Length: 196
Image (tube, rainbow, N blue to C red; front, side, top):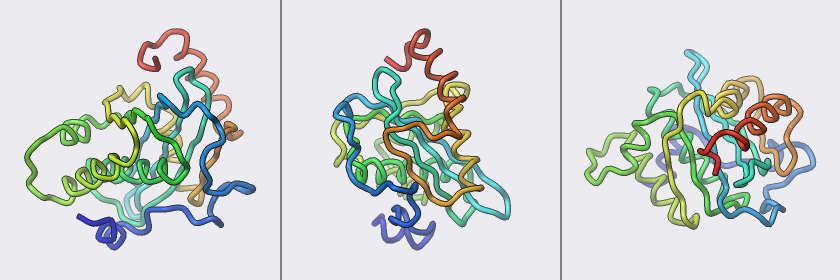
């Protein structure tokens, strides 16, 4: 399925300059260490409102690289919403110049279908196939499952998206995330092997 078809079904996929965090543009991340980046993505549904998606990117040492939020006007089923979040995440990573990534999602079915060889051509599976195709443009992309309790920041961002415009933060942890980021990644770097 072409991305234009997804755009028709679930609104625009990219960022507009005027909807980015003030004083930031959609240029490649200035950090030279984008190799081995870890991305945590999540989506949230609100009936009658739509879908919120958020992700955070850290390097292999847990240093903040980027975070982003956006909403889609439709509230799709949970697995399609998560798959759409992964696709949007991949497109945004390409746009801001981050490659060599492992994307972590807490929705196991998305990971299982990512690895599946046969397709039934449902909307969900078409989004997964588009994600795989787009992901080929990122070098060494992996999609893995992570327990929900290890995806707290992405979950927070997905819910925050409903109270925000589409926004991306680069290089500096936004103040709204600072405390949660410090708790999650200071503990994670020292004690959790999933970050390594």
